[in-house]
Length: 159
Image (cartoon, rainbow, N blue to C red; front, top):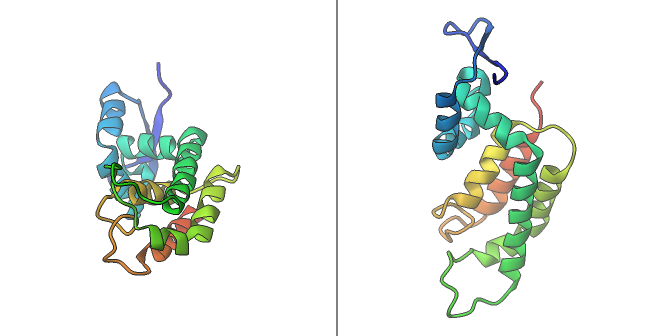
C-alpha cells in the first residue's frame, strides 16, 4: 500500500492524511504542465494529492539533476553555431550567452544537496519547456536574465 499524503483540509485550517490513490498518481504525471504552472504561481503543494505528488517528483534528485543538465546543455547549444539542417527549436543564443553565469548558478543550485521549493523547480521546468518563453523568444530583451533570477529566488525555502 502506498504511503499516505498530507494535504490541506477543505477549510485550509489543518493538514489531513489521505491515501495515495492510483488516480492521483496518474493525474500527477499526465497533468504535469498544468500542475507545474500552478506550483510556479505559488499554489501550496499540499492543496491536493496531485499537487503534492508532483511537488515531490520535482524536488527529487533525479528531476533536479536532469534539469540542471538541460540548463548546461542550453549554454553549450548557444555557443555552437547554428547549422542549416538543425530543425530544433531555435534558442535565443545572445540572451543565453548574456545570462550564462546566472544559468550556471541555477544549474549548480539544482545539483546541490540543499532542499529547494517545488515552485522554483517548476519555474525552471516551465522555462525550459515553454517555446514562447524568454529562452526561445527574442521578444523579451533581458527577460531570460529576469526569469532565471526569479527561478533562483523561488528555489529558496520559505520557512
